[in-house]
Amino acid sequence: MAIATGCKQPSEKTAIISDPFDTLALIEERTAIDFPYTEKQIDRQLRKRIGRLSADEKTEMERRNWLEYKIIDGEKRYFSRAARNLQLIRDFHFNRAASDSMEASNPEIIHRKSHTRLIMNASQTEALPVLPVSMTINYTLKVLPDAVPPGETVRCWLPYPREDHPRQGNVKFISASPGDYFIAPDSAVHRTVYLEAKAEKGKPVMFKTSFSLETRGQYFDPERIAFQPYDTSSALYKKHTSEQLPHICFTDNVRKLADSIAGDGENPVETCRKLYLWFSNNIPWAGAQEYSIQTTIPEYVIQNRRGDCGMQTFLLMSMLRYKGIPVRWQSGWKVPPDGKNLHDWCEVYIEGAGWIPVDISYGLQYSEDRKLKEFYISGIDSYRLIINNGVSGRLWPEKIFFRSEPYDFQRGEVEWKGGNLYFDKWDYEMEIIYDK
Image 1 (spheres, rainbow, N blue to C red):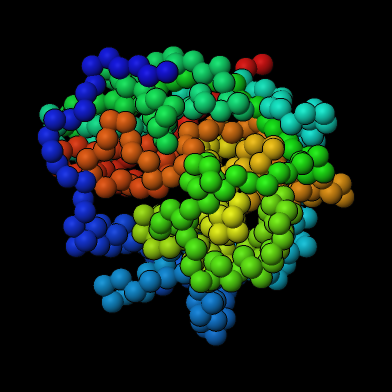
Image 2: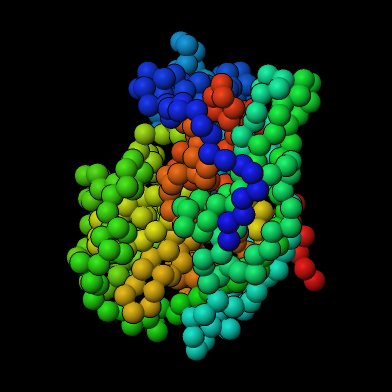
C-alpha cells in the first residue's frame, strides 16, 4: 500500500554528504554526544551502581574497555552508558548465577517464557504464524523549538509497519499529521511515513502517525526442519550470503571465530545453534554507541566481547553468511506490554523450510525444557513491529543529507535544507493500545 497526497521528491539537487572531511566532522560531533561524562561525573555514577572502585580496579576496567571512554579535545570523556554497561559486564562474568536468577524473576521475562510456550504448543504440527496480537500504535516525533529557522520546511520520516511478512498483517492506516503524507511501498527496505511541516519560532515541530496491525509469533521445531541442499546459483542465495559492508563482513577475525565455533558442519540448523550457544555463553548485552560512529561492528563485538541486539545480530549474520548460510536483517520494535523498545533480530533461510526467525540477543530462556530454553534459535514471539527487512536502504522519498542512523530505521529521520537533524534535536514517543 502506498498513499501519496501531495508530497513530492524535492527538486533541489543537494548531494548526500560524501566528502570524507564532512563525514569525519559529523562523526566527531556525534561521538562527543555519545561520550558526555567527565571523570568526576562517571565516578559518581559508579559509586551509585557498584560502589567505590579503587584506582587500580578502575584502571583495570578501563584497560579491558569494560569502562568505555575516549580522549576528546585532550580530556577523558566517558560513554553515556559506561556505568550501567560496566555493571552488566561484571555481573555477566563474575556474578552470572545471581544475575540470571534475578533476571528470571523479571515479570517481562516470566511473561515472555509463558507466551513462547504457548507458541510452541500451537506450532506442534506446522510452523505457521500463531497467537495473534492486535494493537493500535500512535507515534509522535517532536523537533525541539528553534532547531530549524522559522518558516523553513522540515522533512520527516516516521516508522510504519510492513505488510509483506506473514507474521504481520491487517495493517490499517488511521492518520498522519500535519498535512499531506506519503507511505513507502513494501518494496522499500525501510517502511516509512513521510511528512513535511513549517517551523515556527519558539514552537516544537510535531509529526504524528497512527495505525493498527496484527502481529503473530512463530516457531520452527528444529527436530522437524528437514533441510535441503542450497541452490547456490539462485539470486536469493547470492544476495543473502554476500558481505554488505561495513557491518556484514568477512574479516579475518570473523572467519577465524566462525570456523572455531562451527567447524565444517554441513547442517545449517546445527551451525546456527552452535553459534547461538556461543553468543549466550560469551557475549553479554550492553548498551551501544550510535551505529553511525562505529567503524566495523562485528570487529567491535569480537574485540570487546559485548554488544546490543543489533551489534550481536551483525556479527551473527557475518558469521552465518561466511559459512554459506543465507540470512537477512529484520528490525523495528519489540512491543510487549510494559517493555517496548527498539529491537533488531534476523531470519535464516533454510532450503525446504523457508525463513526462520533468530533473535540472538534474547538468548536462552530459563527452563529445563531444552526446546523452550532454545526457543529464540528458531522462533519469535508475537510482540514485534516489523519495519525493516534489511539495512542501509534508501528512504522514500530519498533523504538528502547523511542520516542519523544510516543502517537501521526505527526512531525516525528528520532534516531541513540546512542539513540533517540529529537525535539531540528531537524526541520521539510510541503509545501502544492493545485490543482486548
